[in-house]
Image (tube, rainbow, N blue to C red; front, side):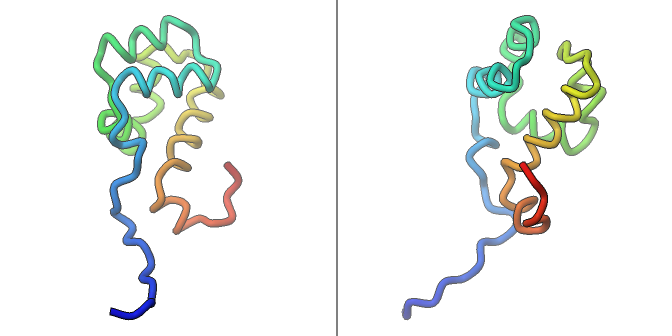
Length: 97
């Protein structure tokens, strides 16, 4: 059992995937989303696992349904969520956050 380190697998659990709806709402707040969006996140129980599905399956439509009406804000949310995932960072190390 030497000191060699193995690279992290691409499918490791990352912290954001385990966020509660409140933590997801706080993250949306930091991105400058309206209070109504934060309320929708909590009311619809959008936790980290749901966000992961939203972002990877039908990102812009689902975010609009949550009340994020500005297209550029939806794009920013998708981009920043993807940067929370270690698999994205390992595959795209030069992409700016």
